[in-house]
Length: 463
Image (cartoon, rainbow, N blue to C red):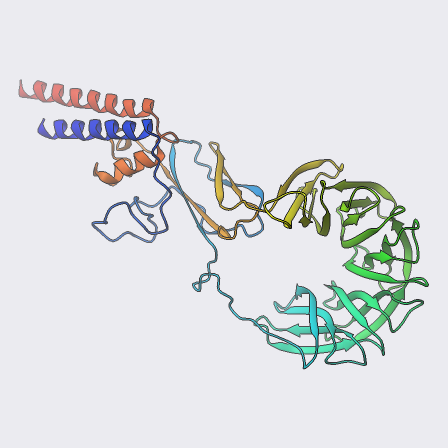
């Protein structure tokens, strides 16, 4: 009976203190990985976290969320309940160096050498394209550098003529070879032309093609299309609606022969920077327009033949430029660039999410939104949101402890067999989430009933 009294007193004290903390709105902050609110009396196992000594019922492991900035994401715990305690921890890097660069390399000569795109190659290495004044045939030449997975140069080659030639975009084709797109002043029909260079896997040029008129054309983006050919997007001064520049989309076969070309624009300036082939075989081009608004994002969607299906502008009273577009797994488009209309400073990153039917789904300026938020939980899933500019939560680990009877209802929240300060800490930390005044009263009530039953059985036994 003495044990029962002590047990009941401990539970009542836990309940009173937790309610007091809850009334005053005190919720303890999340623990750092491996820390504890009190000095541990024993060494914690690798599966424990801070105030828990038992392994979690659910452990997501370290989940890579580097691509989830500004997005919600859901993890399945399949516990069929929300009567749980949750611990969420994050890391900037799984690298023991804490996110410091593993290595860095420079490539170039005694003059001016600049890289534009980089792609990871099929063998785990990298390919960089840009331009060089240190090497080549004269003026500035396109420059392709291939490295291994550690950045050690395997080979490099230049492409160009006596004048200036640039590579602005690069893809590794399905056969392991390379296609570079940019601008040439050494070849072609006019001052500057679209330039497409195809190489083998060792960088040796197989062929090159130019596309343009009597004025200037510059290819900014290239993709390999689903039919094995290529699509180039860039800007034209030779063709279009009469403005200074218009979007220009050129479609070629696998050998670079032009199949068709289309321009998009109006009386003022339009500049394109990015191209993607969409799931339906058509194309999405992103840049900016001065014809439709005061220098706003401009997103153009076409069918597989380049015919415009719709176009949409996004912006405010300042200026905006879109420099990249991707189609996400849900079929929608994410457009990234910069804005002076929104955000925390003069220029801010700006990410716009667009449904295929061209409605603006949501927009986020990346001026100031860090951290990770737990937004909802069901019997099956937990949903989190990562801030648009958050640099820290690149990897997330979610651990969930299922609250089981009978130990929990008697105050042993972490189910280590002892009702102590650890249990009080968990109650304080989760008050208003997992625990409430009602559930705490329930603890007291059930403990009281249990004590009563125990006394009754003892009396009956004594008789």
